[in-house]
Length: 256
Image 1: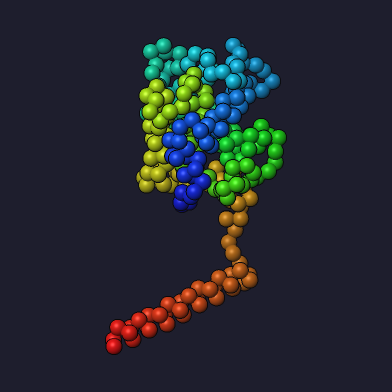
Image 2 (image 1 turned 30 degrees about the vertical axis):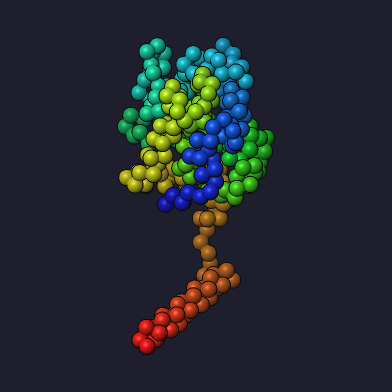
């Protein structure tokens, strides 16, 4: 089952989307705007035409590469009449930018660029660039984050979508970017009980990739003969005895 949302999700997701041009979200957007150019540049090659790291002009559907990442799954990105809203899910959500028409869940939220963006925000920029081997650092360490959640995936997807686009102002009321509706749509989908089985598998995949140490520890069962198991059993036994005593006392009080 997916784990419950915690404080780090509030800080880096819904709350972050609505705090104006300041705080964690602004920092994430500023650094991702430059890093995303490295992520979409062919290994050992160059972008043609080139894109400036600190300027968003020319991105989005004005550029072949960013356009291919942003293109909705059921659209032709080269179509000049294309208008993208928050209801359209871009190809970058899918592994290899490809959608399986027979199984829409195949590769969904498992793209390489999503992983890079997640590491960039929740671990550290160096983790995304491959310069660090740390499994926890930066924001994740500061806020005690030990697992991936649907809210954090929706947040990363929203910022990545904006970073690839030509839009310059990130605002929840901006109808051009329609970021809030895009974020809410992903989160609603990932929290839909009917999608629970697939979401659980998705969370396992993400956690084994982003937080491998915590994931592996969580998968291990506690030996019944271990000291920790004995301590927990004692605690449960003590609580049970205390509860029984309390019930007896309450019963006696009520009878008088």
